[in-house]
Image 1 (tube, helix red, strand yellow):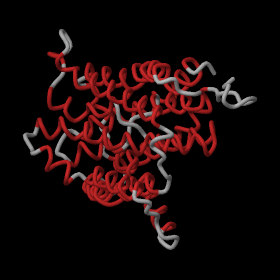
Image 2 (cartoon, one colour):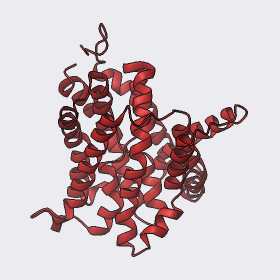
Image 3 (tube, one colour):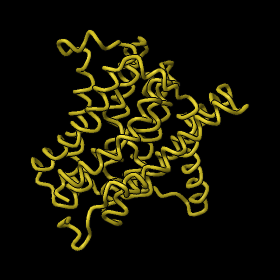
Length: 316
């Protein structure tokens, strides 16, 4: 039982499966539509562009602006979240340089897919902590999302820009996900709030970005692509779903987080990777099919890593 919430037991694995099912079903739906109907790949390329350049940035901006950030009160949680994220980034970046392992990892595929090891599905995270910890948990998760998205997006773009010999700063300035995040943080810290008239429209744009982004990931998925570069895929998913929960547990102790903060950090550490990993890789000219396959597997593995983090490491 969680000490922060007397009388509330952590959900069993079937609960997490039910929570993850909507995202996975949308990915599968996109795959089936693209594979078996006239709405084939060329159409979905335009959908990807719409999601990447318009819908996702609006969603990121809104998700940050709508939750006031008290950075001082959450400093320990922020420190633990950044430490956990930097652990994942360092391990993902190090894979091609590890003795015995590096020669098995192609550099171009690694540049595109390294992000899978440390990025996260914020939608699942917010839904999960809302059920586990209520409004307090949602606010804490929003803080983690707000401060970690810029770091993780920069870390996702850098190896792709570097490998493609593109200007890194130019890619950052032009990257719509980073623009949405940075402008959201600036607006939040300046006290900006959306006018009530615009709130329903922006909320609907966010909902559309989630559904279309997941379906586009499924439409671009080629499971056969996962047969290649198995070492890379297994290594990245091992970091995402096993190493990061262990790191989060250690950093929670190091930063002396209270039970609620620990719960939120553990949930954050075990989330499936971001569905927009595929969109980012595809729009920067990399193998979107391979990344989409990893996103799909990560969504499935979240059914195992969330109970592992919350039930075993969290003592639930």
